[in-house]
Every structure is written in structure tokens, then in C-alpha cells.
Length: 72
Image (cartoon, rainbow, N blue to C red; front, side):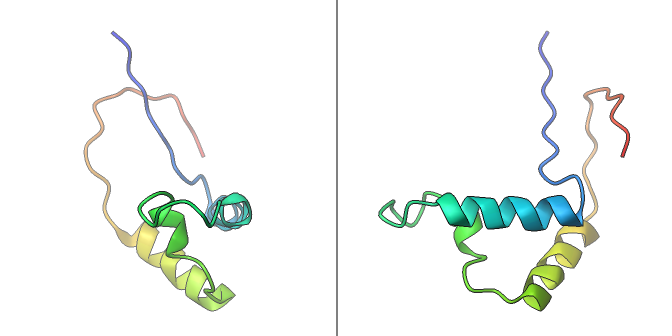
């Protein structure tokens, strides 16, 4: 059995740098639904990004049945 776990953002710094990198390489000619998650961050100030990070981390996680040895 194959089990996959995705940890989208490892830290606040990772969140900020990943968003910036994706926005820098996002092809503006793509339809709006492609890259929609990252398009939400276009033009946001650093304070707004911080607010998004706080909201992102404030959500409780769901039970994940995949065992993990991952440590932050």
C-alpha cells in the first residue's frame, strides 16, 4: 500500500517564499482557475500575507491516518 502525505507549508518563511516563487513563475495567460490558490495573493502587502498565514495556521487539522516520522 502506498501512502502519501503532503505538508504544503513547513513554516511561515516557507509559506512566504513559496507564494512569492509561484507568483513569479505563474503564466498570466493561463485561465483563472489554474493557479487560483496563488492568484489570491497577487498584490497583497506583507501585513496581509501575515494575516493569511495566521488564518491558515489557525485551522484545526483533520485526523491523518498515514503514520509519519516527520518532525518540525
